[in-house]
Image (cartoon, rainbow, N blue to C red; front, side, top):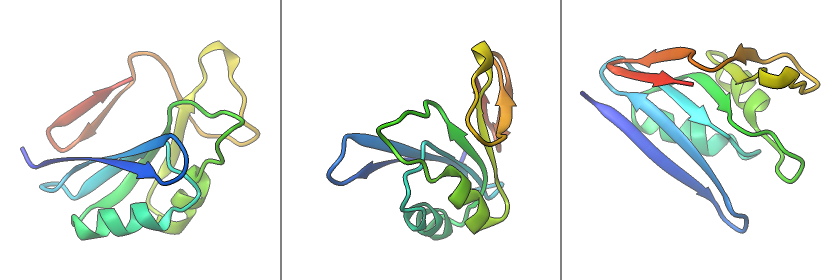
Length: 111
């Protein structure tokens, strides 16, 4: 199984993002991207991956998300965020709920 799991730390703030991908299928997801979306694009490109999913695990006031910009930049991804408890974001992400599953090559991600 050609799994890629990269942790991306943003300098100067205590924020981590992640890239999960499968090199056999050439697909990847980014979790909690920051505003500097080029680093995710470059990392995916260097691994031969196309970003297809962008997951927001916790949108909050002290971090500016790059999720929508990343989706626009790559043109092949959608933003996914929880709608548990009636969450609202000011934009319409794909709705996630407990138990949803996503497949990246041989890896299954369960929400």
